[in-house]
Length: 81
Image (cartoon, rainbow, N blue to C red; front, side, top):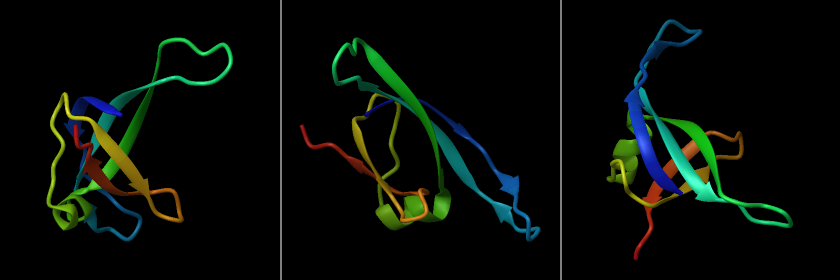
């Protein structure tokens, strides 16, 4: 996936705690019968998870998105070219 945008997005959770993180916007090539062009996706990752990873993606970076069992973003890993 190629990062095409990012925006800070902090919010207050149900428990009243502030959750700090970012929304990332990315594109990827579509595949399969009849597919043409690019697909796009938005995903959110907390600052705490980004810090665990030691890498903060920038616009233009190619990344692999890793998910938890619950479907939340666990990590963004740089794609080695």
